[in-house]
Image (tube, rainbow, N blue to C red; front, side):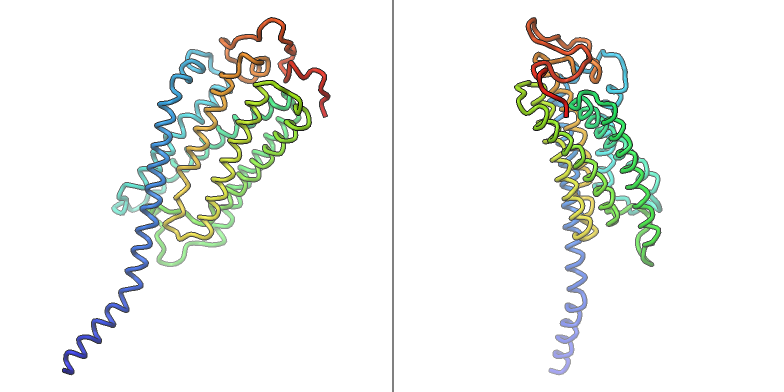
Length: 316
């Protein structure tokens, strides 16, 4: 009887000691699996969208001369696949056998940054066009973009230096998770996007409020939808990084990258669809030789500024 009681007590203590660790292990596996699902799903969305829009790309981009805008578009379009593919590999592959994954992670991070910066470059030039190609606006946006990029990198490194990894923490970089300092980078991205939103809304309702132009509608609608999606994804990333467990931190990494690449590409494609309304604006910003000129009787400006039908409006 005493032996049975001791055996029962031993089993109880064993369950009590292993139960919390088992729960933590299951939670970690759930977080990793969720991040894997989101990452693979984002890669699938990127491929599916590419299949839907490749015909538009062939008609709009292929065969044209290379210029700054085409290079920016190409980077936003194709580096996205490189970054998403590397993130997918990091999510699903077993990298526990490697001693260090720092080189792979650095290349992956660089592809993410190049893709996002290129997509933001398309948004900058879209805003530049919407503001009647104001060089002052372009200069301020470029300066702000440089400050945000430098600030996100510098502040992140400073915080990481002030908070070194805890003793015993995995420092190989082969675990599919990121630190909470990633929220800093998304914060700078939100700041820049909010500035673009304010500029677009102000110009749309103060200068183009009476416009019936399809091109104006396309520029304002696509810009606001695009930036809203980025801001929402960035806010989600910040909440995940700050409040979720470490295994969930990469859950929105690939989705945000794909959102940038997909929507940046569609900016040019939607402008293609509205070319029959007014095309003067894209003569200097999106130099596409095959775009038709407006039909006779439609007034356009000779200096490639918006807008033909609002010639009576006053620039603020």
